[in-house]
Image (cartoon, rainbow, N blue to C red):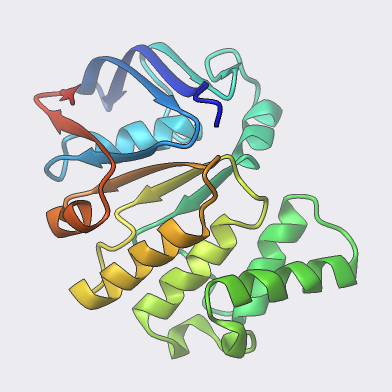
Length: 222
């Protein structure tokens, strides 16, 4: 596997409402790595994750994702970049008024998928991957948190992303369900996919080892 740099933070500073969250962050993440962002709540883990997909603009420095500088990117480039990313949120962020199938269809149409049969086949494939084929017609509020997170993972995989970003994906789940969700993320991500995950669950890190980036005092260290 080619260990090429995929995400590069170069002297990155992040501020929110004039408060400095992170300063002088230098970090390179290579293709195929599984990287944990670890630290207390408020240490900047989520802010750095959001900066990868252009949800937070950096105050200074530059971030390059798959060879594309986010500083120089226009909105349409950010949108095309996001199609290379799969994002898994702590609180699932599913649309409650639509079925599981409709949730996936909504994202597919928004990212340019066309053809009823093509879309349907992909949905079936994704639901099978996350072992949720029997829930296609269910609504999110009628399934468990662990099942909702499985659907969120399926949604993140729609466009076969190069990078999967997971922001505390087990934060709202009990330990047993957390373990199952992590096993799932590990088993369905290909060797070429890069996974960057924020967590403060040290049990998970012990069971599923990866590269650890520690966040403290507005900085990072390995």
